[in-house]
Length: 380
Image 1 (tube, helix red, strand yellow):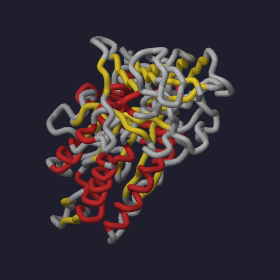
Image 2: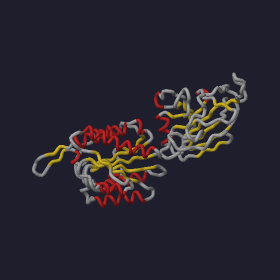
Image 3: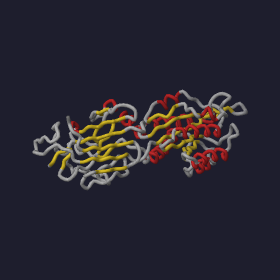
Image 4: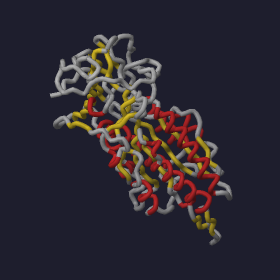
């Protein structure tokens, strides 16, 4: 049986690193991967991928005359937490066809509804969003209960790991209608957000094309709800995206919700420009949240002085242990075919072990999961 000789244990919360005898290696640091080697994330092998043995028994000599043996132990936790984006999406009639009192109509479909929904689809399906989870709720909801906050606590798309096509399917079957009951909609959304915020960074994204109106909704009332959510426990910040010309007072909601100012997307004759602008703004929100979410990438630890890690995949064991269930060894999967297993960031000069998408989701979405990396090592 192959004996693990350098172990890296990863839990799904904050950064720590403990090294029994790891030479000059430093503790974990911030970045896009958990660093149990060099604090600056630099290569710990100076261009070498290592020449250690893959002999199965501890103490057996390798072809270079060294011996496989236990050398050190490293324990680390990934920095940050998961981030949840709770989206509240305005589907009021003004986002589409507006029927005016004189019998005429104004069609905003091509300048508001279509470009905004396209931007949201792009964001939800973007592989760059892979470290986030999101949900989607619309307002108003159809029927006489649209003023009831409780109906907004169950989103149309539940909290789902990104990227996902479930949001596009939902948006494609939704059409603009009704007024803008922002007070009950935001109240219900805050309740849902709080239910998902235990230990996770959770924020609300309000996307709307106008002022609150229905169900006694006013800017002051909506701002008060956003402020209570932000100053409460857990703290839930509210981002606001305004689409269209009638959005000036939305800054008050964003400021009360802890995000300073609303983000505005133009709603002129060029729908493509609106989409592009909104995608850029959504990306900026994602990048801000992304700096606070748990990583599925782990820097390869530095071996002790006089030792060499075996970086051939056959000399590395990666095991994912769920909070409830038995440990499962993850296979090396260079191309991440099927999105399961693990791979190196660079097969020639590896610095980082990365989980493939599905395995990463298994790890991120299970707060009690443990990820362990075991490297064979030889004496130089």
